[in-house]
Amino acid sequence: MNAYVERVIAETKAKNALEPEFLQTVEEVLTSIEPVVERHPEYEQAALLERIVEPERTIEFRVTWTDDEGKAHVNRGYRVQFNGALGPYKGGIRFHPSV
Image (cartoon, helix red, strand yellow):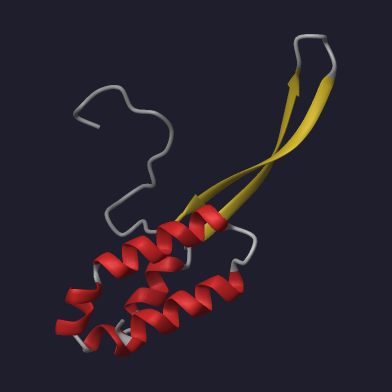
């Protein structure tokens, strides 16, 4: 495995040890783009992989809901946004193919 890819995966695992789904995704994506990283050593100088795995911002919010028995519950919700370079962040479910 490419040393740069390996290092970024290890650093990401150390920072996000309690997020197995995120770590699995990071490992799969970085492993899949390894041939491209091999051909472009300038990506390491630009810290490209580090930028890919670190979100631009994380929004944390309270979610209050009532169950079927009428009991109120409070949970924490998160919205993680990784890259807004192409315009506003999009979220939610989209049913129309043009979105």
